[in-house]
Image (tube, rainbow, N blue to C red; front, side, top):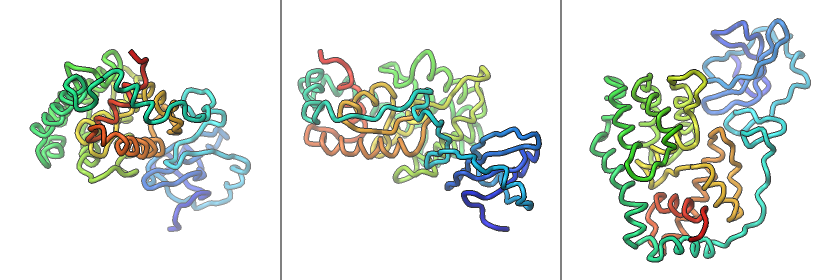
Length: 314
């Protein structure tokens, strides 16, 4: 059997009615395929590589002449007129409005004693450290995987104990939080929990585990059909709380605002992608290096800095 590459003519192993497909992108785990069925209807699907196989009849390849699909590096289609995920053209990021020192001045306007002060520690670090300790107590090494297999709803409930806090909510209480809570405590969370274990147990983030986690999160059943559970906050909140040494939390508005003011282009798209997350991690590491002399220890401090300076100065 010949290898499948970009441009290959393929068929779906389980859905022959999709017709022939042409591969427009192929990555580590997924492929983006444009299908044309017998009636001429076109459909684009991003699916696991195991679901496609080379077509035995190559005569249909001519049907795809002139069909072009722009893709991200992780094989998501990019709309011809938009890359923002909102239907609007993505605006290029202009020159920086702030220097890093000016951004830090905005930070100390909120926390005059800096990151070592009690005001900052109580507002930003302590409760997140408590949630990380709670995770360690609930999930000693190997326990998340075992519980996900034996009693996934119980495992999901324990994960939500880490996410749900009485302090500042990282997830929107009227949207993201209840949707994720239902999916993990009432749905079928086992695949997501196993993908989550892969992410938090790795020494550092990788494309493969990030994309697998996003795919598992998007596949979670929800209480109301059409409700979207996959978002940047729901995808990044647990890895960030559990492993702030290497993972970062992305809340769209404050993150985009601070990045814009500092002249950083994250190539943000509302749909999570490895490209944007990798840019976020690179930028965050640079901020951490800058903030370490001011008392920063990990991505908790970077996230707090990004959120704080994105708002008005008191």
